[in-house]
Image (cartoon, rainbow, N blue to C red):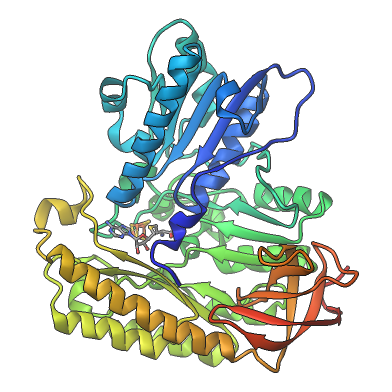
Length: 483
Ligand code: SAH
Ligand code: F3S
């Protein structure tokens, strides 16, 4: 796996079905996590009601929106460069308006309007419903900003407009915000407190996707395992819930069970799991349902108990390894992936070795690996010196990446000779005679097209592999999943 793979899906411009009667054009692009891509679909829906269709051509846009990421300094630099490019276009088309959405908007607030003269509108992640009002202010020549974080907003009542969609896979948000306060992480500051979306609205959105022919849904949240619906409000206020609310509360295992039972031919994935909130019931529910994919993204960040504590992760190295053992026991065919940070303040060579040995233990299929980037306002930035030299961070990161490549290669190879169930997503990038899809474990599989089509569930006999891709031949439809 490459470093910062999360960012490799950045910068896609998006298309939206034309809505008749809409005359204005907006250009929207998203950077960062899957949640941002999902949020942009909510924004597109809000703006479709305001007379905007999307365009992929920046030059013809009346409104340009960029949904931004603050997770590492590099992510912010990418957006700043993009703003410069918008500025060049704005010189030719002065009536074009530019709005910054998402985490950078939340983190920098008014500073954006002062520093970046080309920005007309700044909107935080909980304020998208206010965009129609903000646009009116912009039209009246005023700078417009709303960065208020909400205790309730989940956008559960907005039907997202699917952007850049292959018609097969879709994201559905189930929680917003995060209460974990990992000391390195800016997310709790930019996305606010954790709240869960009403199960009924989640199921309705999935029903709508099913009706439109979608075959795989990824349930999204910063920390999905801590999903808890009890009638509204913040997760942290659950202690104040009434007895009735407590009796009818729905947790993540129950939500998964409801989804998998109600839509037996829809595949489900979820992201992201935080080890400290992962319940055994979730793993048991995964084991129970064929249509819940056997893949868990289980970020750990470090293999050293001392560093985990400094990061405010609520578990030790040993506890994490026991959790991994338990998962492999209940679901032997599971794939796991990690997020890892190299060079957190005070990290020693011994801590780094702990990270490498934990990786060997967990036998991750995939990984997303980063050098520590100090984020202003976080506890680590306020209390700890960023004292691991850049070249040491890089060298450790490279060692982590090299080990992950070795582990990933070993894990990919395990499928050779097996029959795997694949959901066809699109044409293979390398060959127009091949389909590309993923098996339950999230490994990419390519095989000759024959008469199959995207959205089909097929059984593929794996004959060969590269480091991260399986190669095979279809042997028929999946009896369990093909409808
Ligand atoms: N729970 C979230 C995590 C968001 S951040 C989710 O849904 O994925 C994604 C990853 O970025 C984290 O797991 C962490 O590995 C990395 N990251 C976060 N803050 C970072 C920082 N300050 N420097 C380097 N990497 C960071
Ligand atoms: Fe960030 Fe930790 Fe939450 S990594 S998103 S504070 S679980």
